[in-house]
Length: 319
Length: 286
Image (cartoon, rainbow over all chains, first blue to last red; front, side, top):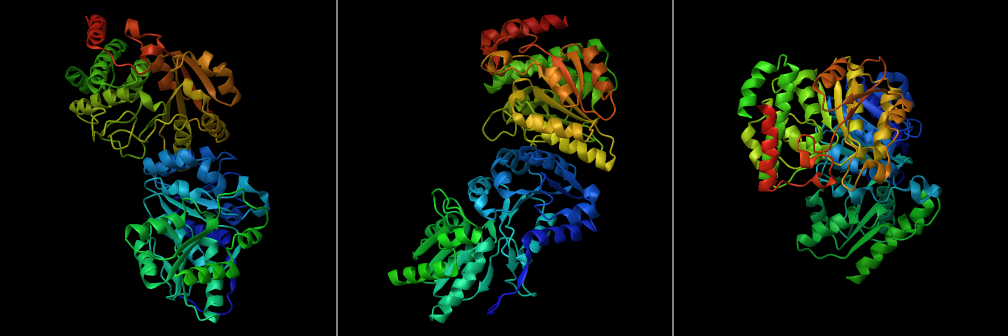
């Protein structure tokens, strides 16, 4: 847990991904990275230069990248598929479903430049659907790490796992939200800030605006809990229910369509447990997404310190 | 089938062409028996690839129940997963599981469903959605090259399946990486559920397409045992190129009234039809 006024800017999660793969590959020749003309955008050039025999290029062919990866994994390779999340999660969906998850080979699918990282490149390149479609697939762990620490730990967890993973992150430099002694566990949310008035359950790059909103609320005498719900599946239901029971309002924040993502997943957990709490999903609404940079789109939809602060006060006032 | 099992123990080493031909007839008899029992199955497409599976499992591939976890084993990926019943029959006869298991095909909670799954011993991948097998096989073949392991990867593809674009993504890559340990077999029976492949979405010219993708293309009679033995055992005949055996086949092969008929794509024989088919097939054994 951290409570600091000034967050230090770290690396992009992409760079940490490459660093972690290089660390893993230094002692494990079974690590194989597969790219779809994406080694540059995936910041994987250092890996490619140091471990040329452990990177496979398949060209711009996302169905193929997942099928080939499943074949490689079936021979005992620890495969990391690195491809933009937008294409990887839907162009290859049937391969993910059948060749990886259903066939039960531990391919690690890494959706790079996800969410609205590509900003003004537009809807073709946005990844606002991946959590919804992949949550419906059995036998895949879904992780959306918030910062460098969570990214590094998620990649290590995936490499050590014998079940398939989907990990997605953007390309922004992320401040460190964790202290060095923090422990990362799959299926266990990280408590970034403690608080009991309102709970922000966020994932990925939206954890940061939630932390910033919490600071604004703190100045107004409202304490906000911020959870980094990095594992979308399987969900940490205990932390969700605790937040719903301890706090007077719950706001779920995600860089994803409000349909089918973390918000709906949390709502289901709370409702099925019989809890009643003022609740709000903050994500990208079901509309033609506004154009602009990631930060502009975030601001437009209220995924910002002021936007989340406003929603929290509104929910608390409703009680 | 029990008779086949006894035969199998002796014949695994080397069957004569005649013995393999007789085995094909017994496979067809078993296939129809279990399709009828299950009340479901892709009869026509099963019958068209009997000789291909027969030759692969009894004469070509280094894979058996004892070495199935050996990293050096040859791999078989059935991309045309709907023809799973013939795969079950061949795997049972090769001793991967008891033949009695086949009585459960398609039944509630049975492992033996209408498309291949790894829950069944001897099956490498869960296939059946078309256009997946070649990419998977390309990955396995690539790993074999990287690790310098000597296995070959065999993939059975249907000709209707060639309309799936994913095949061509894999075809490009396998050629790019010079995967001569990859051997695709095309069950070229020219029919799919709606009609002929020419009518539905013509795959022709098939050989020129694969050649253009850099593959070594070999054409064979897909029901001719000696010819299949020769081409499949010799493959790859060209270094640095993946191979495709275009096996010319007849959908429904072996039962006169099922041959070349879209009606038998997934039709289950009635009692009368079954007895008639058995009579025809048994006549071939006498």
